[in-house]
Image (cartoon, rainbow, N blue to C red; front, side):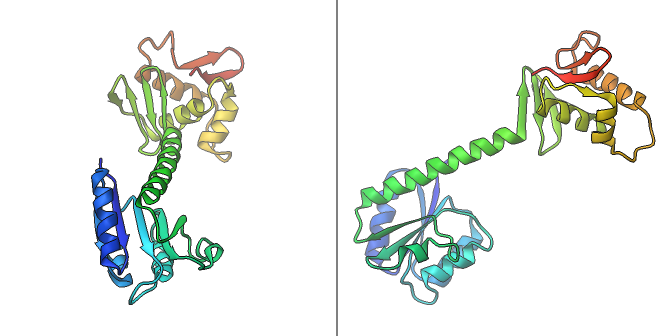
Length: 229
């Protein structure tokens, strides 16, 4: 999917030059020429990156940056004149990610944009890895609380999912039945450890090809259960 960039500057020639250059890279580019228009566009659409000049009519770039930070963590590169206080611009009160001083080389602008987008992709990959667990044919979507075996969705009850998620997130760690009861059902739960056995049995019937010879949820005799990744 092409990346969407918002370019904000009141100098139309600068905007035109940046727009042309980024479109050549296959990016989708929107333009704004004052602070209010920039803020409206940032609220209307989701952008992968915003290039924002400091000296703008209506609202300054710093005011726009501050207000965008109230609803979005989109990367923002400030376009600044030489000699402005960069530490202040990148300080916590404004929340910009980077800055480029004018006059700039368009190749430098492109390089900075690509570097920030690469960094964002890595962070997203790390996050999504944490939300989805995969082991063999088993896929566990922790955020959507869904389980798939070989691409087919399996319907688990809330507690069956909780047990599986806890075990899968801690592969090869053996949990006693008391431990599972406390962690999944809570310390105040009045039931006994047979509740855990019943849930493990049902879970195996749903996710294991051969429940009596499990691939995922194993028994450590006399101790408890564990997930083999």
